[in-house]
Length: 120
Image 1 (cartoon, one colour):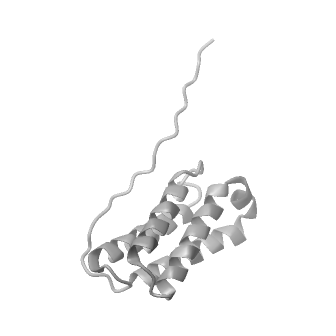
Image 2: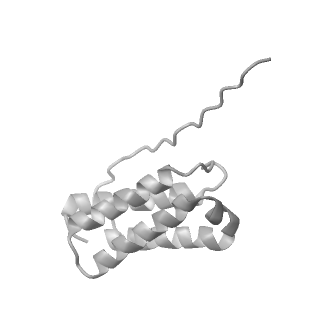
C-alpha cells in the first residue's frame, strides 16, 4: 500500500511596477470589492464553505471606508494586507475560481499605489 502525499501548491504572483497607474487606490479597492461581491452572488456555496472570502471582503470594505474618509494610510495598508492574506489562505484552486486572483491583483495594485504616493 502506498501513501500519496498531496501538497497544495502556493499561488505565484509576478509583481511588477508598471509605473504610474491611471486608477488610484480607491478605484482598485472598489473593483476588488466588486469582484468579491460577484463571486459571492455567483457562487454562494463557495462563499459559505470558505470563510476566508468573507474575511477578505470585510477587510476590503474597511479599507474602502477608511479611504473614503481620508483616514490614515497606515490603517488602509494594514487592512489591505489582511485582505490579501485572507485570500491567499483560501483552499480554493485558483485555476477554477478566477475571481480570487483578480481580487488579489486589484488589492496588490491598491497597496502599491498607496506605497508609491502615500495617499489615495
